[in-house]
Structure formats: C-alpha cells, structure tokens
Amino acid sequence: MYATFEIDPKKHKSELKSIKKLYKNSFPLEEREPWYLLKHGLKIVGISKIPYNKTYTTMLGIKNVGDPSKVLGFAIIVYIIPSNFCFGNYIAIEPEYRNKGLGSIFVNEIKKYFIELAKKFDAEKPIGFFYEIDKHDLCRYGIKDREQIFARYRFYNRLNQKKIDVPYFQPALRSWLPKVPMYLMFGPIEERKFFSKEEILRIYANIYAVIYHKSERSLKKLFRRLNVVDLPNRIDLLSLDSIVQLK
Image (cartoon, rainbow, N blue to C red):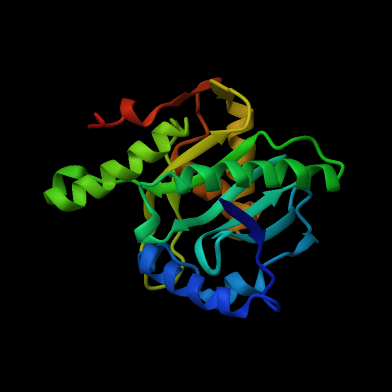
C-alpha cells in the first residue's frame, strides 16, 4: 500500500535529499531547473501583474506505507488556478520501482490531490494536467536507449495521456544551454478530444509566462517562432502511438 504526501521543506529534509538525487539522475542538465529555485518555489500562492498568474506550487512524494523511510518518487506540480489546469514540472519514480504499476498509482493520486485542492480555493475541478516529454529522433539512438524511450511513451499511452498537435519547446533554462524540442502532453481528468485555438493560445501563454517567466512582449515573439498564430480552430489530441509505432 502506498501513500502520497505533500513535501514540506522544513519537515522533510531527509526526503528532500533523496529526491534531489533522483531529480538529478532522472533529467538531463538542459531540462533541469536549478535545485535551489525549485525548493524556493514550493508551496507558494501568489498573484503577479499578469491576471492569470495565481499559482500554487507543490512537491508531492509517494512512499510505501510498510517502509515509510524511503521516498519512491516525487512530482513538482504548478496549479494555475484561474485557468483551471495543472502543469507537471517534473515527475520521477525510483528506477527499481518502475514498470511495476507505481507510476500509474502515483499519477492517479496526484489527480485526486488536485481535485481536492481546487475545492479549497473555491475553484472548478482542474481540466487536467499538462507536462512535457522529450521529442526524440528515434533513429539516432541505439537499441537500449530506444527501448527506454518506447517504455516511457507506452507508459503515458496506457494512462490515456494525449499529445497536443502544436509545435512546442522548453526554453533554455540557462544562458549557455539550448532550447529543447518537446511534446506538450495533456492528461485529462475528464475525457476530452480537442482544444479550440483560443484555449491553446491561452494555455501556451500561461505555461510560458508562469513556468518560464516570459513577458507579454516576449510571448508574441515566441508565438511567431512556434508558428501558433495561424492555428486551425480545432486542435485534436493525439495518442502517442499515432506519432510512433509502439511495440
């Protein structure tokens, strides 16, 4: 039996040490925010000059009730309250617990957590979760790396996570690093088949402004680079097996 809990930086110092190690081992440098910034941003509710930037940022951990001394995985989630969705900044499971169903359990527990959290803010139930996964040219990888990539894709596909069929990249997190091409994924809380153009532009504006601190001026330039200004009125959600044949 597993238990999900909210990480408190003051109370869970030993848990944070193991999470920091898992964080560094699970994500490449170009995709990692500096650790001190992640810690600083935990459990903050704030309102900025941008009306939709009222957010609640938290880190959730998961443990085995029979052995609560070890954190088995973590997730850093940003709840953008007025726009009614969550952004999964980072989610990782300890390697020895992968492919054993724990990831699915954790994702479902995260959904339940944020449905209850929305009630505390007198907000509507979140429409779902957005998050990024690597966009790989699979032909460039050897058999072992390709299988790891396929395993990750299959995991998200089993959870009914959908790809938004619009160009997307993660901005450079440090001045000397490049931007990273990504798929923007969506995990619905209730079934959904598409977004409107207006919804996608608002979601993109939220993510790039709140998560990556882009100004309104830089957002216009970024949208032109992504070529999302002339989107169709309906953007369908695609399964991952429509992108690559999953074995």
